[in-house]
Length: 218
Ligand SMILES: [Zn+2]
Image (tube, rainbow, N blue to C red; front, side, top):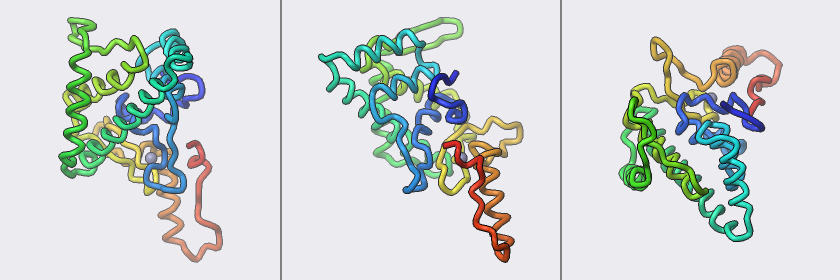
């Protein structure tokens, strides 16, 4: 579960890979868009918060990333992870809005998953579960790519959605009973959108447009 500086409201995707893609908040709003994974330290912290590995492994990986001999390698790994994140977004976002993903993104993600599978091991047999053991920082993008394989193979992609807030851009799996979830959070993006619509219907009001307090959590 999310720990430390990683807030639980940043994990709304319903799948590790979607939460990974959602480490860019306000993706559709150029002025507010940010990147929560600027370096290897942030990447390791996020993976730990997301449950990919425990605190002890996170400490070992941080020490490895900070060691004199490998800072360049850690930078490359962080860049590779961000690259994978954008490839996954490029593939998943069109699916979420009912379009065909571009062939280029399919090819890149296919390559990343093929590489992850060649490094995967069987963790448990019943139920059968594959893992990429994270022994060093360079295994982190592979572990995330293996998780992308799980998402694409085992989840119902007809339930993949993009938050309908105009700036949010987060992706999530709609696990609601009647498949009617429209926002990453009804209390956050949902409220803000409803307030904006309400304001648009009452333009005579002299009040400024609502940016509700719930919208400041990111
Ligand atoms: Zn949202």
